[in-house]
Length: 401
Ligand SMILES: *[C@@H]1O[C@H](CO)[C@@H](O)[C@H](O)[C@H]1NC(C)=O
Ligand SMILES: *[C@@H]1O[C@H](CO)[C@@H](O)[C@H](O)[C@H]1NC(C)=O
Image (cartoon, rainbow, N blue to C red; front, side, top):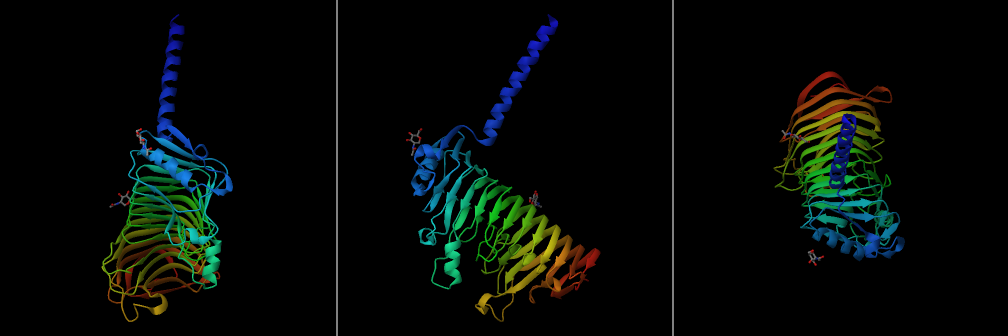
């Protein structure tokens, strides 16, 4: 009898714990009401435009006061126009699960001047998860640009603006016309396990661009594109990047900074455990050679592997594309407290470390620790201009402070 009672109590306990787990799991992944876009008229045939149906689904989710899931099932959904997922919502827990593919119009004129294709603006607590694909069909625009015709500038595949508590997990961004993913004026964003794919010669197709944002984390992602793998713009603070594979592309870049005179600085950035394969740059800080009150400080690049990278470590404060609006000027951007730690591998050019700072604003507090870079299995070279700092551990090429 006593045993039976004990058994009953155990069962009740298990039951209660299981219920509790189901509820926490549900709210954790945002399942309350699920809105399947097909039920709102979206068509998975890849040809019928589903822009309006997706907007209607969003309006319903945004207006709801309980956590809501928007579901994009397997299939190809043409989203020909620009979509603005606009806040402010009653809902602070919207999960978009994407198993299918959202595909932009092949004719780049539909969104080419709209800035973004899929824009989340002024939202809170939005998660985009799943194994689905955002296909910007950018190849037609890249071709247009290649042949120097007059073409629109192009749209970003996915942009979050003025938003907080955002998750982007698992999805693939394919062939964006321009930047793939932009985080702009956001706070607390977690990007994890995503994939970016575009041709190595595609113009301005940066993988992830962050600006004017704080507490952004980018983890375990694979980025192959034609421009920067990750670019870190003005006003970025408390950024954490870890476990990334880059290539092809232009590497991870802080900048370009100092394009404007009045500019927010970049500070507290960690870039950790990144593998660069055949990229143009590895880790880089770049500023325009012109007056600015911007800055970059407290940045650490740690545990990077370079495989045949043209410029593995770069600071370039003399950026002046087309020699316009900057010749003869010097960068006002102040670069300080930058650590390069445990960076090893191969350079595709003789100069593996290039620290080219501003003549009126020398870099200070640069630290090279355990840097081992070779060129054709031989010693590589380093170049310094107006750069001051220290080395520790084995540093090869020899430092040039
Ligand atoms: C928003 O929700 C309220 C209350 O449920 C409802 O009355 C209203 O029609 C909804 N508005 C839209 C645009 O769905
Ligand atoms: C730097 O950023 C990290 C997140 O990337 C954060 O945990 C840490 O508190 C920040 N440090 C300072 C001094 O703000």
